[in-house]
Length: 609
Ligand code: ADP
Ligand code: ZN
Image (cartoon, rainbow, N blue to C red; front, top):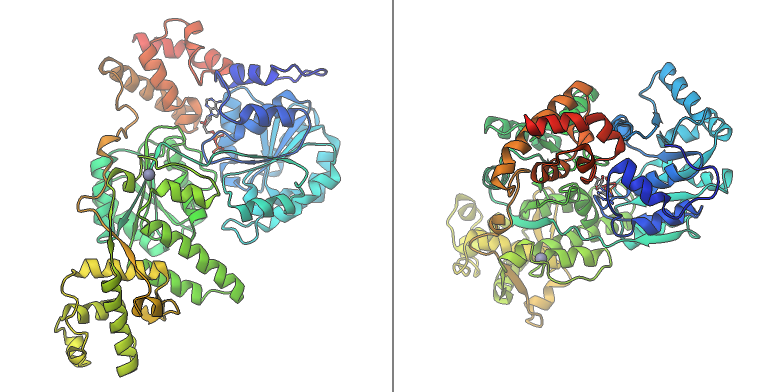
C-alpha cells in the first residue's frame, strides 16, 4: 500500500477497506473514527471486544503519509498480528525484547526507508532513548495506543510503562493519537483521558452490547462435572476458555478434561515461559482446543472463533468479567459465557480482600467491585441489562441470557433470612461463638451431626426451625444475604457475622426478596448453533469441510493460525455461494486483493475438486 502524497480523497478509507481487507462496508462507528484520525485529530475509542477496533487505526495508517506506530503490551502476539497484516499485503513490523539485534536492525531500517505502513512497539521500548531517536528520524502518520486501559492504575491490567505514554503528545505534538480499549467504566474512561492527556481528543463510545454472547450464571455444585456437561451437550469440539482462580485448580481442571476426552491445555504464570507460549500457540493454531487458564491468559487474543468462556470461580469485578467473556464470539456467531458460583467463592474473595495489601480505601474499592459482581449473580433481572448498566448504558431485556430464557422466580425470603440471622445471633450472644455456613445450616435443619452434638447446638432454640428449606436452598439464602449485605463473612473459616444492615431484617422493617433457581436451568437449546459448520445447508457441508482442510494445511505450511488465512465466516460464505470465478470470489467478505491473488485459484480448485 502506498499513501497518496497530497490531497486525501474522501473515499480513500472505503477503498482501503474494500481492497485490502476485503470488507464491503464499515461497521458502526468505524467510519467516523477513521475520518477523524485521517484528518489529523486525536481520538479516544471505547468499543467492546470484537467490534472492530483494529481497523480504526490500521486504515488511517494506510491512508495517511508515514508509518503508523502502534503501542501494544501484547509482545507474545505481535508476531501473529504482523503475520495477519502481511497476509493482507500490508507492510508491518514490530520491535520488542524477543528479537535479536539483526531482526531489530532490519525493522529499523525498513522504518527509516519508509517501507513500513505499521510498526508495533512494546511500551517499554519508548523508555529507551535510542527508540525515541529512531522515531524522530522517520515519518510517523499516527500513534495508536492499544489496550489503553493498561494506563489505569487501579485497573486489572495496569502496566507502569503506559504511564510514560503521555510524553508522545509533548514530543510529537502534530502527530494524531488514537487510544483504544474495551474496558470502559466511567472511572477507567476518565483515568485514561487524563493520564494520556486526551482531554482534548474526541471520545467515541460505542454500545457495549455483545448480542451473540449468551450470558448464564449458575449455582456451583460440582463445577468440573457441570463444566463437562456443558462442553458435551453444547460445545463438543469447540474452542473455548475456562477461567479458574488458582494455578492448582487450573492444573486439576485441565487434567480432568483431558481424562474425559477433551483437548484441554493449562495456562498460568507458574508454567515456564516456553510451555506457556507453546500452549497459547496451539490454542491459536489448532481447532477445538480448550484453554484452562488463570486471568493471566487472554488479553489481545483475537482468535475469532472462541465459542465459549467459562468461569469456574467468581471474578473479582464486573469489569474484568465482561472483558474476559468478551473473548467469546468475536466472529459474531452464537457463543456462551457461563459462570458457576457458590458460597465458597464469596468466602474466599472476602478473605482475599481482608488480607490484601494496600490501604483501607483500596480494600473498600475491592469490596465494592465484589458487591457489584455478587449483585449481577443474584439478580432476577436480565443479565445483560445489568451488565450494560454497569457501563452506564441503558438497554431492554435481551432474550438471550439465562434469566430471559427461563425467568427465575423471586420469593419473599424475609422469614428465612430472619431464621438464619437469629441462629447467628444466638451463637454469638449465648455462646460467644462464630461458625461458618455449614454448621449454621445444620442447626437450622436440626441435624444431629457429631459437630452439632459436640457443641451442644441441639439445645439452641433455633435448632431445627428451618426444615422447610433444603441444604442447597439454605446455601442460596446465605449467598443472597451476603450479596445484599445483610450478612458478613470473616476469617480463615468463613465465619458468618452480622452487619449493620442485619438489624433491619431482624426487626422486620425490611423485606428480603430472593431468587429461586429454576428447576431446569437455562440451556441454549433454542439458540444453540455452536460448531462452525452448523446451520449450513446440507450440500454446502462437504465443501466447507474441504475448505477447512485446505486452510489447515496452508496455515500449517506457513506456521500461522488458520484465521490468518481466512475466517470461518469467509469460508462459510464461499461454501454457500460457490463462486465460479476469481471476480466472484473477490466479492466475498474477507477476500481482499492480496488474498485473492495468493489463494484465489487454490480456492476455486478446492471448490471443483
Ligand atoms: P477488536 O479489536 O475491537 O476486538 P477486531 O479489530 O479484532 O476487534 O475485529 C474483530 C473482527 O471483526 C475481526 O475479525 C475483523 O477482521 C472483523 N471486522 C472488523 N471490521 C469489519 C468490517 N467493517 N466488516 C467486516 N468485518 C470486520
Ligand atoms: Zn437477558
